[in-house]
Amino acid sequence: MKDRVLVVDDSPQNRMVAVGHLEAAGYEVVAASSGEEALAYVRANRVDLVVLDVLMPGMGGFEVCKRLRAIPALSDLPVMFMTALGDREATQPALDAGADDLLPKPFQRAELLLRVRALIRQRRQAVELAAQNDQLRKLEQDKRRMQQLIVHDLKGPATALYANAELLRARSLPGDTPEIVEDIMVAVGNLDRTVRNLLDLSRAEDVGLSVQVEPLDITAMTAEVITSLRGLGKLHDVTIVSSIQTNTLMADRELIRRMLQNLVHNAIKHSPGDSEVVIEATRDAHSVMFRVSDQGPGVPDGDDDKIFEAYVTRDRPNGGHGLGLVFCRLAAEAHRGRIWVERGQPSGATFCVHLPQS
Image 1: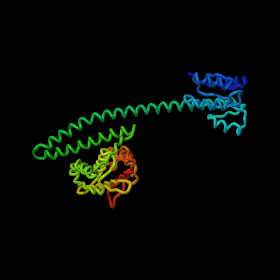
Image 2 (image 1 turned 90 degrees about the vertical axis):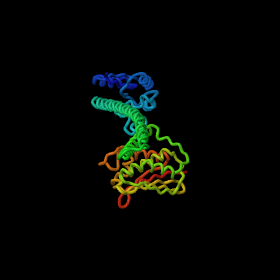
Image 3 (image 1 turned 60 degrees about the vertical axis):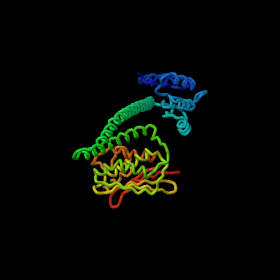
């Protein structure tokens, strides 16, 4: 299909010259003698470029260009003005009208064709790039839907595994079997945490985390977190302790509990043996602050903000997916709060969560 150029000029001689040059170069050319005729044509037909005279009876070129730019479907249609006006008279009004180029009259054939070819090529490249972006967005949406389906399907088996491990733990088991069951429960708990984080991150990309604010008991919630991670602590020879100096918080209980659980889990994983992970909660006039501290190697220099991004972890050699800290950031931001990390002395890391209460 040939590229189609619309030449708009009230002078028959000027139209004939421009049309002749463009047709000889292989373009399909349509001519219009007025701005009104040009607008009517582009509304009903495909056009790849408009070559537009500035001074015409009735609707002038600047007004035609402004009206083209006001039509959403034609807002990116290349427009090149042809004018005998001086640079100072034409350049600024042409820019204000939304022109892509300005060709002084009289023009040379080679210059006309060079500019026409460049403008059409630029538009074609822009269209191709937009199509590629649309395809990438569709692929990303399809990938996200598939991820949601897979993660959703993992929830059932994880729940069944945990329930059966609970039944086994309640029985009198021989030898080291109880320890094996505890290890199974820790592993399934990690799997369940990852599944929930993946689901929440996928949903948050579309609509953000949903928050249901209610009064919650910080002491009871912290005890629940410690109980759920005690097995992991034993596995790593890490003790979890708490220092809760305030007991009430207005927040989404499930989001805050899981945020704290992720932070403590992260701290245990990076703690040396025979050490402590400390959970603290304090309050000032307008906010509640959580702090989770460990005695591990700390956060590498330059990674203070990166670790709250997906698939970036504190300890790359040990692997990991880094989703827990991303969830913590999203949960804090959903409460109009923020999260950051501080370096311990001489080692360790403290993750701080500031939650406004007014």
